[in-house]
Image (cartoon, rainbow, N blue to C red):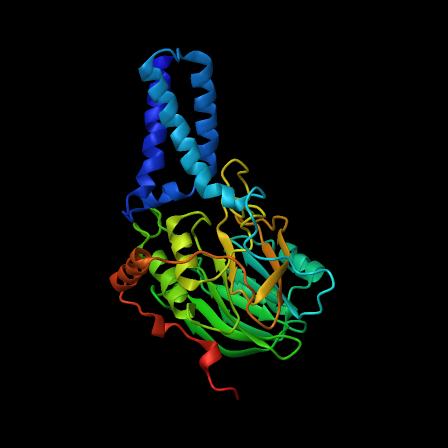
Length: 363
């Protein structure tokens, strides 16, 4: 038993420490994902060690300290995404009259044919903008029935699981479809006009993940996230970035995105909102994200029921205050800035390549 617990502690330590290595291969970066599962495993190992080891022996105390240290380290990453942490984004006041924007973001899973389930959710929740990922020509044909209610759109049907569609009841200005890092991996950038005439920049992303079936490393994903982050970091106008980022909320890359962009994460202090994998409750992570500038407060954040995809749809409703609020985010240090620059240079992309809809001339 003691030998088995020692081996479990050493394996746990390896899985905990390996992601600290800034090596971008998928088999390293993939360990950013299961921090919650590793924390649960650490709890089990610690309990077994307390029950079945002789703590009068120094070497067995060492084993317990290793496991406990791994548990504390994993909790450091995931606790911000629980109600035990202070909220990063303020809730919208009950008496607020600010204009709001609701975005329903859904990775539909290309081969999935349950389009009616998503259409029913749109009719039920009435979002201002519907964003679909992995949507192809078949999905476009099904979703076009929403065109009367959502007359503004940007469409990019693809059969490579990176198609993207935006349907909006709000006017979209200066829209652009871009392939920032990889051919066949689009992003959509536009200005959405709120009911009071205010305009906000919206950026919708779906970079390819690091995996043996996609990209061997995370270089492409990281570069796309960070080039968008760098493009909006000094923007004083309201900004929203959303989509399936193929990265967990608590990874170093997503944290670096938040630092460089200066955008806020409404999940912090509220919950994980694990959106993937819909079919495996024991292996779920927050892959579908919404980040925004401090011009907004949060009225609603909800994971919606399954539509037959491997992702749950996500609904967020943000209210625009008209000015930046004193809300807490995270700030980059010099090492963060250099790391982001290195990742962008590795893929030969620069912030000025990202379409900035708010800088375009108003027609």
